[in-house]
Image (cartoon, rainbow, N blue to C red; front, side, top):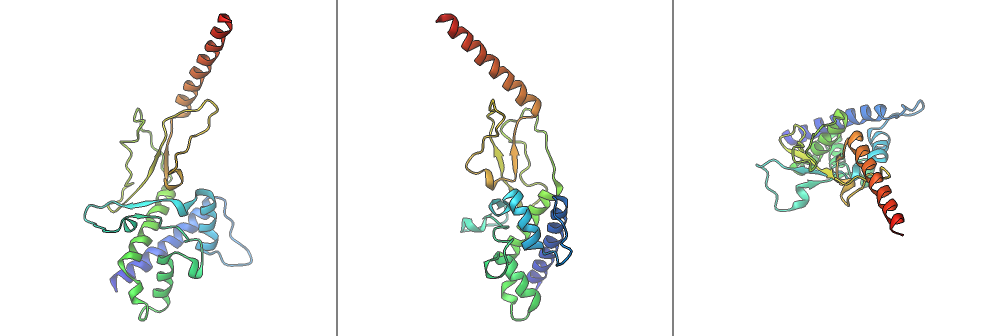
Length: 209
């Protein structure tokens, strides 16, 4: 019973923070229908941030999982869908909420952890923090837990700086919540240096010819 109650409380919080993020990111409350946290709010956030691909890792040391799929989660995958196509934790929440006696088995630890991971992920976006890592170009000082004792997120690390200002994406870019990049001042200084080197190189080649 305790797990079912925690599941319901977690998803109620998800509904609330999803609506707050929806409004903060340009969403409009419809005048002729209800605002739904999944097909309206999470749908917009999915379009903006690719939430379904974001990974949350169960990193607490007192958790042990034989199956890695239970440790590395994509808790918001299908969360913007309804019915049988929705996420398992959301379907479990609906079942427990409407018929707790007959659906008590769905209020299990697996669904609770995924719902809590979804709530954690949305909270990271809600806080919208930015961090200055000074000379740490590898992100080793970045706190991937972001205040959690249970979960952590992935940091996208790419230390290259392109002349055209394009941020180079690794294959795991969509899985990451934060990205590491040089400050605008540092990036511009590097680009100026690269342009000067290219200019001097071309000038030297012309002189040789």
